[in-house]
Image (cartoon, rainbow, N blue to C red):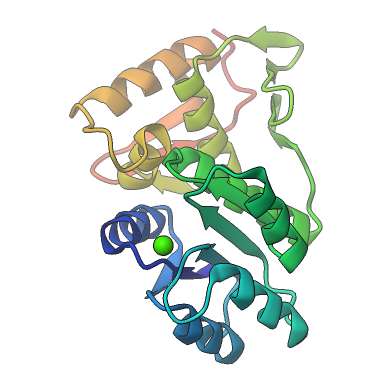
Length: 224
Ligand code: CA
């Protein structure tokens, strides 16, 4: 997924870029609104994150001109202001969604996934693999007809594994999903959450790929 990040706060832009890269986005950074508009109009992007207050051209004007030029590129707007009017104007200008700073990195990832699901037409709010079902709306997890209670972090972990069922998910991606990019991660924290998930879902459900990450396999196997 190729993402254009237009943000003039360099520290924030770098942190976002690092986190998004760890989450498997390909990120291009721009700090000015006018340069950002040019980049969006000439490059091939799947998504744009646009700060509201930018030098050169405001985020609002940028999105407006982008839409006037016929682009339907999904745009998530970032705003430092907490004024409802700004958000409404941003959406009116053509942004698909907005986030108010400061925001949780996981929230940003969730919004990006939601925007992507909307525009790609796959509005599925239920992730399913074998007997395992995870509902993103109700946050309910079922294994066959058994309801599974998960902590917030176990849920996030399982969500990412389910989204990539059958594929290895790297430690970096899992840790970013669990903690965002600001929290320091204890070296065994991921193992602890995986251990708890295995206890709830069955030991064979999550396979360790030594030195790489984890893999969700055959979720019907071995109910605990
Ligand atoms: Ca700014």
